[in-house]
Amino acid sequence: MEDDSTNCCKLEEDSEDECVIDRDCWNKYSQQLRESQGFDIKDYPGGHPGTTVFPRPNNLEFPTNVERMKDYAAQALKLYNEKFDAKYEVNEILKVNGDECGIYFIFYITFMVTNGEKEYFQA
Image (cartoon, rainbow, N blue to C red; front, side, top):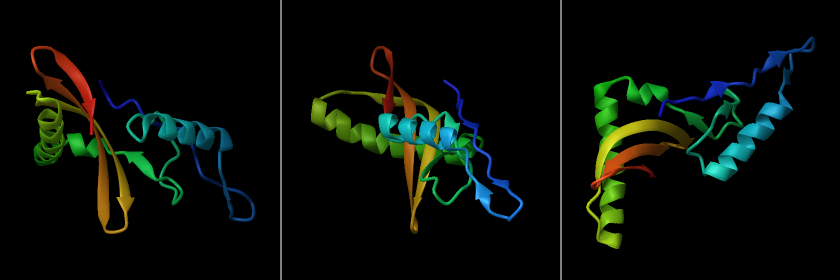
């Protein structure tokens, strides 16, 4: 699974130097945000202050970031394993979205796990 999000919205300057927003794109983004709870966003409105969750493909470009995402996913998976008496292990980080919340950063991580068969999880 690859990060298939695209920056479909463009903020364009009109003759009065005000931003014009592509409403169709914002509607798609908002719907995808609601339906996937932030994990699956294909229509990304770009770096606008109203954008809350956004794709973070750079988190998969550097080994230290990948290891950090695996650690975060493993922490969430540990809670899941304890609750459901399971033995899943993080296999691969597939996609990362993010949300800046003041001084904190929230990650929406999609990853593959193994427990006999490969499955997808989100945390």
